[in-house]
Image (cartoon, rainbow, N blue to C red; front, side, top):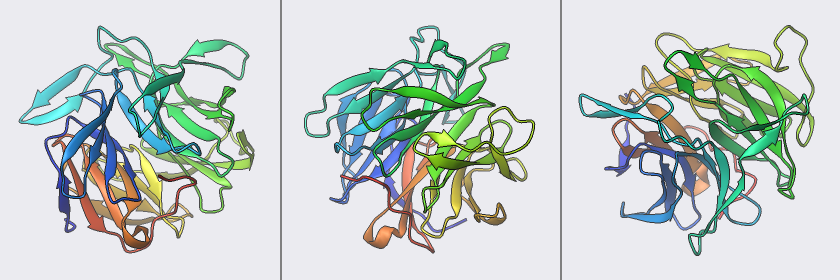
Length: 311
């Protein structure tokens, strides 16, 4: 197990870490429904009450935090660990929200999108988000699962103006983590339950070049998980390694750009869900250990990839 430094504890299923320039860290607490700031000394403060199930988060060109809200889960505790479950009875749908860090004001940007078939549909479980250099953003919708069925899922793009959102790839199974390559020409998407990592070649903002094959979403297969490992959210480092948070056998699975598993770093938490890079030269990885309610930091052997926007 890698050497980890605890940054914060007592969180209600933390996810969506965002490192800020002042040394603090933002996370969502999915089970609490909040966007929470972790000060450098570990002090916690609520930035905004988002309701539902805030999930992935990212800074946009306006300096505001954009949050994928999955609408919430039914929650379960087992041996002191917290786990998300099925669609809750009070589920009101998913959304993408925007939070003003100065005031904590929350704005819902949209709750529905138009599919490739021209049909408008509600978002069921927005999950992860990444901005490109133009100010537009990609996000995944993992969907929800119920007692005997599970939603199919897709990947969406919202333009820089924020006034047009559309489905770009459909037919994924539990689309979760999303990230961009260092040159911005490849979008990576992790599927949770199939435990597969896909690469989508991009022709421009919001446009993919479908790979040949029989998969309806147009991605090309990059890697599959080994052992009892599932795929959650991800981050990309400056050398192009795709670093996927891995529940099950909790840890970080690090894949080279050619899909080779470069290393697996165990964390000891069965719901290791996300990571981001921060600190001097972006050489610190902040990792959310959601089942135990903690965020930890570790020294990363390579600098992280700078994101398009920061605050």
